[in-house]
Structure formats: C-alpha cells, structure tokens
Length: 400
Image (cartoon, rainbow, N blue to C red; front, side, top):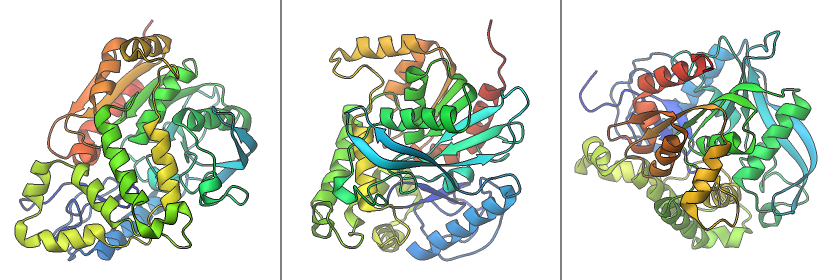
C-alpha cells in the first residue's frame, strides 16, 4: 500500500453516518483504493465531494449484493400510538428493521445490531460481514432503525406530527420501542447479543440496564453510558450552527437547509488533529474543505438530525433526576447481568470514552481500547482488531 493512504475509511455524510469505502479519510485526493470492510478492491479515482459519495454508494451496493441472498428487504413493525418516557405520544409509529440469516431451532442465535446517529439499517448491514464487525453466518441478525433516523417514525416522515411538531424522544424511548419490536412482533424473549456503534453503542448501554435479562452478551462500540461535558459541548455546538443557519428557519424549512458549517465542525472532530495534518496537506486543503462543506444530496433530514441529537444529549443510563453521577452510574451497573465487552477509541473526539471505560471497570468487563489517531473512526481504521474482539465476545462461553 502506498504511504499516506488509509487502509479502510469512511466518507461521512452530514449526519455522521458511515458510508463504506476505502478512500482516503475525508475524501481527499486518492490514487489507490485498498481493503474495504466487505471485500478488496484496487482502483483509481480523483475524489471530489460527489465522487466520494458515488464510490461509497457503489461499495455499499456491492456489499448489499454480497449479502442479498440471506438479507431481508426493509420491513416495518406498526407500533400504533407509541407513548414516550415524557408521556408524549408518537402517532402511528412504525419501527423499521432488516434481518439477516435464520433463527435456529432453540431460538438462541439472535444478534441485535443498532444504528448510529442518523444511520439506517441498510447502511448498517454493510458492516455485518465476515471481514467487518463479525461473521453473521451462525446468527440471526436483526438490524433496527432507531426512532428519528428517517426510516422509523421521524420528524421527516410523520404525516400528523411533521417537522417541529414531532415529540421529543430519548435513547430510552428508542430502546423501549426496540424491545417491543423484538418481543411483540418477532416473538423473541431473549437474544444472544445486543451491539451497536456510536449512538448504537449508547443504545447498547441502555439495553443492558433497562432489560438486563434479555441478552447474554452486550458489545457497545464507541458508545457511552452517559454524555460527558465534552460530548455535550460538541453536540450543542453543532446544534447551534444549525439553529443559526437562516435556511433552517427554526425547523420550518421547505427544502433541506444548508448544513455546511455543521459538516465542517463534525469533520474537525471525527478524527484527530494528528490524523488530519498527516492526511491533508496544506496544498490539498482547499479541495478537502470544499468537499467537506459541499451539499450532500443524501444527507439526513435536518430535523431528524436535530431530534436524534437531542436524544443523545439527554442520554444517561442512571435514573432520571439522580444528581449523584458516580452513584447513579454504579447503581446502573449493578443491574447489568450480561457479559459485556466495551470497545472504545482512546482518542475519540465525538464520543468521549472515559464514561464507557469507567462503566466497564464497575462491571469488571472486558475492554478493547483502540489506540491510534483515527478518533471516532478507529472502528474502521482498526477493523481487524475490532473484528477479533467482537467475535471473541460473541463466542465466549457463559461463565458459571
């Protein structure tokens, strides 16, 4: 591989959702493409914002073609009127999901995979592969679209509560709706594992506390059990750029508003300063910056982005209203019964790893700390290490 090219990379959309590619991080100039998460390819392209997205889309479609024989099409579970933790109600809520593989005779091989911030089950399936997070062959995988992602009930697709009329929801509400989907619609009273990346990792932490008997194994990846002050500063700052954008019109826009400032701020934190300096030269910066700020036609709806961001900002596995943070975290940890393996990038500037690692200590759980300078995207840079950790956690025999 040529020096300075990433081994595995992700072109990030406005909402921060990965699109699988092996391009240089941040859609800079790329000459050679190297291993992807779902296969190997070596070919040339000169990246611009849209060419990066096209190459990512082509790889995503290629990944889907590889798993198409056993992966289901998009499915929906009609939940009716969904009451939330705050007593508000989402009218006629539908929860999206996709399945991969076959449930075995004793119904013991189900693995639940949860989507990241604005991520969709179609995209998430591309990470479930023998060269990705884990080999799905032995399992019945259920990938669930979180509330607010534009597939499940969301501000953008609600007919009766469209846009800013959509109720505020929490990560707990996401998890409660997923529990109903699995138990009431799919007939699963217990699963082998629950896992997710980024906001999916946050949901995984909530799952192990809210429904401690439901899974054998929980694997949060680049997630956190509660938001740190740094996390809140980052996400509130991103939200502020959106609120100050005139075309956002306080959420009452007629067409997707500009999210250029939000995109550039997100990119600044997605990796690390060291990574950006070593992967974007001053001579290439202008091209990189224009590509980062360019309009993304596939970006998440702005209100969907904001409503899921609000859910993350409120996320805390401790009891609501408990102001004794260390005690609340310890009490939450005491509820956990699953075997837990926490995977966290050391230099994650999107989701601070300290609370996740502290929670792991309280649980005496296994941890994999990803060193290096890829930041939040370390799961892609170090996929081989992540893959080994996930496979080991899934295959570990139950401790007596």
